Amino acid sequence: MLPSPAPRRTSRWPAVLRHEWTLASLGSIVLAALVTWPTLRHPTQTIPSDTGDPTMQAWQMAWSGHALRTDPAALWQANAFFPEPNSFAFTDTLLGYAPAGLLGTGPVAALLRYNIVFVLVFALAFVGAYALVRQLGAGRLGGAVAGAAFAYAPWRLAQSGHLQVLSTGGIALALAMLARGHGWSLRNGYRPERARPGWVIAGWCVAAWQLSLGFGIGVPFGYALAFACVAAIGAWLWHRPPLTRRLLLADGAGLAVFLAVAAFMARPYLLVAEQFPYARRSWEDLQWASPPLRGFFTSPSTSMLWGDLHAGARAALGHRGETSLLPGFTLYALAALGLVLSVWTVRQRLLLTAGVVASIVLGMGTEGPAGGRFTYGLLYALPGFDGIRTPGRLVIWTTLLLGVLAAGAVTAAVSRVGRVRLALAVLPLLVVAEGLNTTQHPVVPTAPPALATAPAPMLVLPSGATIDGIPMLWATDRFPAMVNGAAAFTPQRQNEVRHAMEHFPSPEGVALLRATGVRGVVVVRDAVNGTPYEGTLVGGTGGLPMRRVDTPEAVVYLIDP
Image 1 (tube, helix red, strand yellow):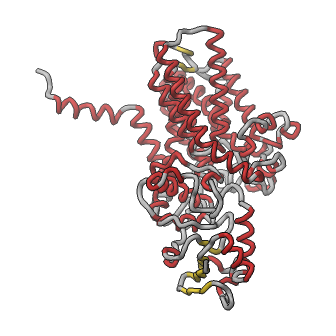
Image 2 (tube, helix red, strand yellow):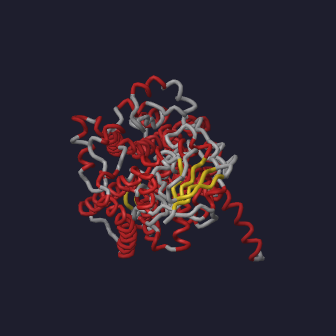
Image 3 (cartoon, one colour):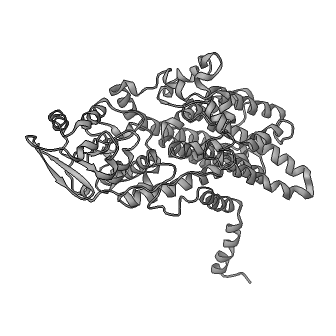
């Protein structure tokens, strides 16, 4: 007798819950929550790393959601950096997270949203790399090693305040989907019968989403996709395997989506580059953030395992930023093992190794051979690379390629060790252990009540490139126009206002604010102490076209039109 429909539906749930991809997805989220703890302990009060870039990025997600909800046409005309146009394109936008920005309003919601997304980017990086190496032909344990390496490589600890750099999961996931959609793997090559056009479209859409998070990571990813397409076309011309019309249409449609997103994102950035030529990175600018070779074997200070041990090595790197780029010693060891023991062919291993070496040499920037002129200099000549501040972020590709090599070694080892294969299960844990950290989670200051009623356009003091993220976050309740703003560069007009405010209130400062269109200045008492703006707490308004209002938390200057 056939079972009734209801029991049949119920009986499928255990199988779904035990499915590999269910376990991988849920496990990655749990692991991410544990490794990033205490991010979710007080998610409406604290923020990972510091209150600089993270608060600005919390504002970014809030602004994109606000713009989509109220006036999508004004997306690029953000409330920050008043009165500059296209100010949302002054840095990587994280626009792909805009759907999350649609949920909730105000600073508390912005903090909660940021902390949840912060945890999920680690989970997505794990799942993306896991899916990629599984599609390429590695086993589950090999996939876990690659996923752990891509999500928890020690170098990522130095990027805890840069969500756009941590958001790399879409890269691996898009490559996995595209490979699956084309029926291609490292172990079995191209198998036309396994092609799935739907996966191809999904892969291109994920790639477009990854690009929408920012060009700093998206530009190299776009060129990597272009290189992969050229290689695939070359292979097809050489071997002439059969291609279905549906597969070609899927590629055409997916590529069209990717290029449309690229064009949509590029237009405001090109306008900004035209208006602010100094926003482009000169070759000399790259010297500050170009790591020497030893940087790829040096851990950031917040590594629980290697931080203190590498203090001397970090000191030898000097004061350059983002130059501690260790992918992980366990990962290096497993990748080295993959050169002699692997499920990949010798040719494939050599190509992967060449990719690792090339990514390191390119990532060295101006520290590369011959000053990098014939290595990273070739990339710098390509459109888009002159907007990238740090060549070392190419370590993303170093880590991914090392992960593929390591996965091949682990998969081969599992097939050889027989009964003791359970002992190999410790390998992903060893990789994750190098990602354990002592990242700080400071409490974010709350906005002074006077900010809610201060007239806009406004200026909040103190102001600076590393602290303006806080007033930007405070403004997410009503998004008033404000001079404050933190981004990849500082507009000249904003810089002039900041300098003038060091002597505010003064006739010159008031005249500049009136000419700029500012109607209110909010001086936060606790924050301004010890800064160049401390004098604004005791400034008088006699003879000036403005009046002063004192509150317990702030001083508000109301400027006459």
